[in-house]
Image (tube, rainbow, N blue to C red; front, side, top):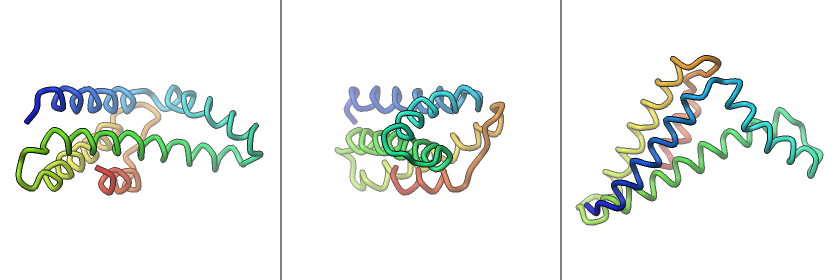
Length: 118
């Protein structure tokens, strides 16, 4: 296991944890900045755009985590399976963590998105 990929993976996990620890109103404010731009540019429904932005954020975070974990375990047999298991376990614990954050919830749909991408 290469140390630089371990550090990168841990940084990505910390970033995801910090984002998940933001109360719902702060998290929404971050998303709404992008939503306002999308609504202005493409004349789309704000609720639909907000949903898409949040799911794309999950997609991107866990895609990067999965890639980093894959590089971290690249020298190990069954590296893809191990990287997926790490990402999947992190996705489940991250969603559980959100149960304890004001204005956030544990979403099975989000777990599924993360499980597929990890």
